[in-house]
Amino acid sequence: MSTIYSQDPILKTIHNAQGMSVTVMDWGATITSIKVPVTGEEKPREVLLGLKNEADWCTQECYFNATIGRYANRIGHSRFTLNGHDYIINSGAEHALHGGLDGFDKRRFSFTQVSDNSLTLTVHSADGDQGFPGNFDLTVTFTVEDDNTLRMDYLGTCDQDCPACITNHAYFNLNGKNSSVLGHTLWIDSDKIMELDEGSIPTGTLLNLDDNAAFDFRHEKKIGQDFMNHSQMKLTLGYDHPYLIKGDLSKPFARLTSEDGKVSCEYFSDYPACQIYSGNYVHASKPIIARDDDQEYPNQSAICLEPEYYPDAPHLPQFATLNPIVTAQNPLKRTICYRFKA
Image (cartoon, rainbow, N blue to C red):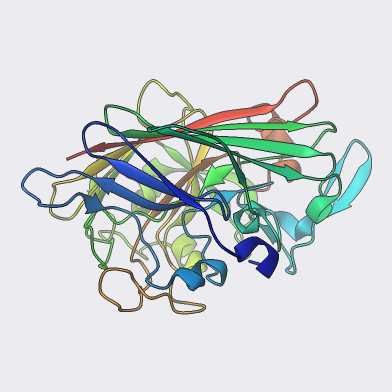
């Protein structure tokens, strides 16, 4: 995160009557804390990974709990063609990840509305920013509801046609302490994942989970039960794959439960896919010191469930109806919810 965005962060906390609280920082519209009250525990339990040293928020390379854009996940070869024009993303790598070198996770958002239980932030991305076309404006609203749901509403408008996908990269560990997430149990209402190549770019082939049991969470199981027990996982050092979901806000598509069974989180979204990432690279770059025990976070210390459009959707025309281009007439309008039970 460049110096211009990382000076004097502004953090605001929202809460509900049940004692759940959420803290959001203007750098990257980042969730720095989610605390959930648990029966029998003196203090609300922290369910997100966080940093001991505040200055590390602008140097960590894991996209910790940030708002991701203009395009979450990957775009192959850092380029795409739209309406006959070729666009090159400033990614610094063969494949663009999470919007490029200076994605929304590294931008300073502005708080525009603040109440006891809701925050609204905005950011502007000019035409040509990171190589994307059009002037893009994003509004993100975080709301803590009375049933211990954190709801995130995204509204993205653009004056030109542009691929866009906004999500949150929250790192969940419901144990409430620096620990492995592989002992958590997970249920996912999905029967297909996308096959990836060696660069984690979708091949266009969908893998049926009837034939790929290591990825099948339709019957709740521990995350570590089949960990690394598949050739696809060996490419990504663990789970790091898009699951196809129904995109229905009326019912959850996934449920994560802590190792002690005391806390669970249900996930809702109207996106058609969700990237399941088991924190395989948390310790692979710059070590991050945990806020609770002053120790380095190891790999697999958290899991991310990132609802989104299909990765590399600009190169997957066969799925275009599920991954619409943002236009002046058709904005991006999507919602993600985390509902906690304790």
